[in-house]
Image 1 (cartoon, helix red, strand yellow):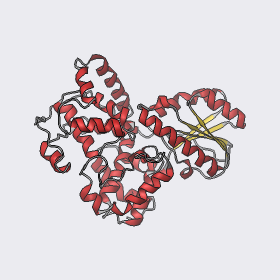
Image 2 (cartoon, one colour; image 1 turned 180 degrees about the vertical axis):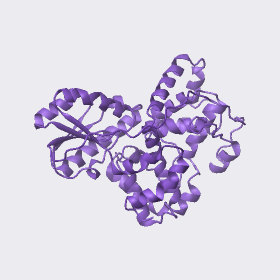
Image 3 (cartoon, one colour; image 1 turned 60 degrees about the vertical axis):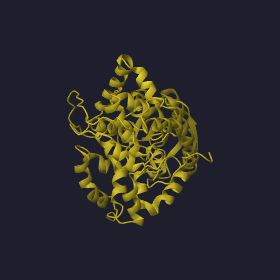
Image 4 (cartoon, helix red, strand yellow; image 1 turned 180 degrees about the horizontal axis):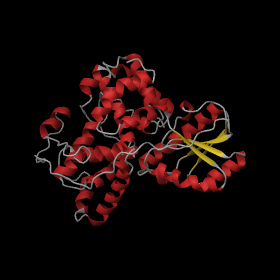
Length: 398
């Protein structure tokens, strides 16, 4: 995979983190909003595809950063890492927001009267400077600078007046790092739905400043308009999980939601490992190709780490898991917890099918998620106030 901007392996993730580490303090703080363009030096870490599939975990990243910087010096970067944690926790306690997005997307696909305008926007043919470039960059590279994502979403919604759900779907289909929580809730935030009444409006001056004069689009919306929706469900408690009996012989199942099982489980107790690379559980060809190569990398690492046979499976289905459990002579399958999204839905469907065969299906949530997610009940700022204390409780020096 030499030459790819994001080689899909754990070793590449660690290499990128090591390369970025000296800049995680002040250089990131002062330069994080600047998008100089594809292939140009940037202050951002470019770790997001690796963190999204947990080839490298949030704990890994923060641990290395706080080993090199104080929390005060690297506060902005640590907060940026924890935005992804926050979004996942927030959606975990309000899973109907994901279902609502899917329904809204499908409805707009079927009924929006100007789908030709959506197609022009996706093709980068609107005539809006910057926006068209970002549309093409997204499709070609599978990546956009975070600030460009915000500008793009704002122009899509408020200038072009296109449905936010179709823009979120466009990102899902092309971003390598798109996940249900971060992508959906970020688009909702720009649209003014996530924090009621608070929108993000892209301006010519802001774009010109932070693209270093590359773009200064004219004709952008001067004011946002209000989007409304039905009230959201109250935040629920985190899902209770089945107890993991580590003394019972098991199969380990790895999905693309968490591809570093070595940092969750010890080295004993698994008869075999299955790594699922199911293309039906991702949206775009770029993400599918990245996840499949990452799954091959995870298969090799898991087999070596756990000292057992490890195999890649192309479909996450009950017959494959039941056959593997029978071959290994086990009655328990264990997997890292999958947050709200297609993988979680697939696992929820599998659990009763496995139970009928007398196979316990157990998900294990990471300590990082169990520590931070309960604080994602409201907005990010109350969550942010808890970060130093939670990090201290987790053993980090703050």
